[in-house]
Image (cartoon, rainbow over all chains, first blue to last red):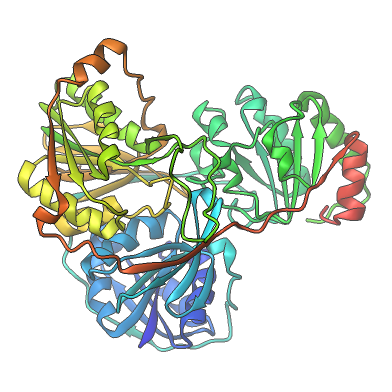
Length: 317
Length: 249
């Protein structure tokens, strides 16, 4: 039986991590079908059909799917899942919210946040904030799997032409009502997919001081991250949090400024290719994962860092 | 309103875990254990709602071995009224946990069930959503703000893009994020008082739930270690290394 990929989208475009989840799905079985549920989401369905790894698109469109409520999604996906061995989506807030609801309907014990497909029933996943890796084998006939998007490359996004089949909508779940979504709009690259991430922690001391982080990020064309301590203190909004319960990032370059490096933070960034730590406490645990550590007062180091960057003829973006 | 709060005993978040030499799991003997951090937020929120006069009773439930009762006792010390301890000998998958909680919900008939959004040991992030599917109740996951209305809750959820607000009719499930509130510490008099509060003990076997594992843990191993880096002397050296050695800027 084929694999069913749940597409994440905003009714117009596919969300970037759908491509990573498609890659993971294609490693479980060559026959990958994708389900897309939304309202007036024809454009997104078309883009989904153009992913060469997708053999068929199942599209379900109705007004009550406009805001992606899990209570509305789970029953229709459960019904479609009858014909599939695996149900797959990303382990971001969309997938984390939705997949366990489907798994419970299917009486399947979900495998969350996998980082590697070992075979079609055996997977590698981090536990204890990534301080251990568990190899797990699921014996359920319907396998509900969420994948860590940064652990899989995005698939090709064009060249395919899978058929789009419309399927019938389910009933509306009326006990949950969407009110609003406050998305933080930014011209910067997205945190989850940025090549460079510049992050600030409690050492920044105030929200105002985050301007220093912003300047560096602008100069490098980077996304802005933060430790939980900085978000808890109100220096910056929650969508910037990197860590065990925030976002996991794997950029080419991660610059941690004023971040001590609690286990929970390291869980979200220690797979980055190059890690830089700037901290005045030479004993801070962040230095144990840093390729380049600079023991310095960040309020002196950041202006100097900007000065040095300004001296460079070119900066890769 | 009556609120049921599910709490889990896990290795304390400050402990650097050790992996068993035979790869069968993580060492838990003689390791400091505590309540799963977002479960503390769940208890705190339930107690606050009761203190605001909007809930009549807060019941804390845990599922686990003998010592898991400590987490219920702690919940009682910060304001829960009574406890339930469902005894099991082995660790359960979230699907089994949610089936047990479904039985407890049938028995207790709460209006709300709160729990942490994720346990920091297995990092599964499933139980609340599974329970709400089994009950066909609304779910508000990753809650960072809860406003209690007459027959509903308005909940702000932390999502990847920012914040989302939904309204859910009771009965409902809420999974709590760390920013929902600041959990209080138990005072000594309250810890003493909590010792007198009742904890009902139930054997999981008596609930008639199939808790057999569906997912085999084949092995647990250390993640690959990063090789040690270097300390640079100054900012100029740092930029030079990033440009010419690492070639990332």
